[in-house]
Image 1 (cartoon, helix red, strand yellow):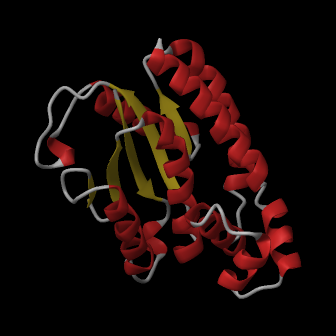
Image 2 (cartoon, one colour; image 1 turned 90 degrees about the vertical axis):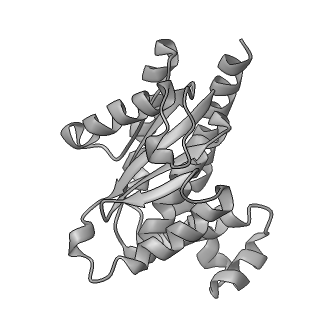
Length: 206
């Protein structure tokens, strides 16, 4: 089993230069694996990424959304598909299998449903539970300011840093770090990630 993230940049045509989000996104993807076997950016503003451990997929989707918002001030629309990988090509866009199909199917519905993050797994009993939880989390995520997204990005990059160390990294006061954490609903979003991990790991073991 693997997971496939399919997404695009919302309102990318309104940006003067795609480099504001594309270069940081490439740097993030390169930490996951090599281009183009593991990730690709295509059609100008669309991307696909394989996260081989499905338990990490939601965390990565949140990190992508935070990174793009912090760098370019726009959102990312993302679908996560979890399932088998039946064919591996030298290019991720040419590989296929259940995970690719489910990710693509969910991605095609995002615009119509006017949501920016959702998932589809082979397990119908957890699809609804997780998607309802994600929609609630999106109330906060879609409202992130660039400063809130910058905090989330920094925290996810270095989760072991103290508030004092994080304040030094961001060049702000410790009280500002605490305020940004609350405004971003970071703790609650990480609770959702923990719930997601527990449910996915349980299913993968069964």
